[in-house]
Image (cartoon, rainbow, N blue to C red; front, side):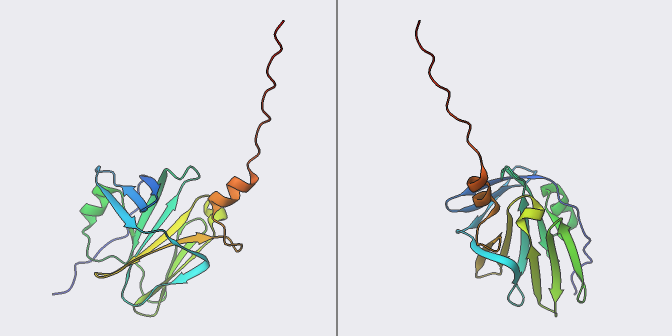
Length: 169
């Protein structure tokens, strides 16, 4: 019996926490999941290994919220995704889809996907989680210099000068 037809589903905004042990996402129904491990930094594009599940997370500039999209997930029922706030995009053939400004995913052959991301255009951090029944891999897209958008912000943030203490009369 073949898998039932699945639809594209728009994602909702989810709570995100960047932790030492990985990236935690809280679904709209209150449940949480942890994508384990420190994400490996990649720039430009990432091509998945054949037959792996792909989840793409884009955070807002505060890194406390984001949208999560499953790519070609045919296992999860539409109602489950809608109740959790997770989006889904189904790609056929050699199709491609812009998930978010600056984040494009395309199908490469039958079993692989390519994610191309520019964190500056996305205006947040971009993560790709690639997994199957035995392995989990985490990636973070960074600029060409190997820095995340958070690193860029830290380098360019101007500090206000400290106020001089007032003299006592």
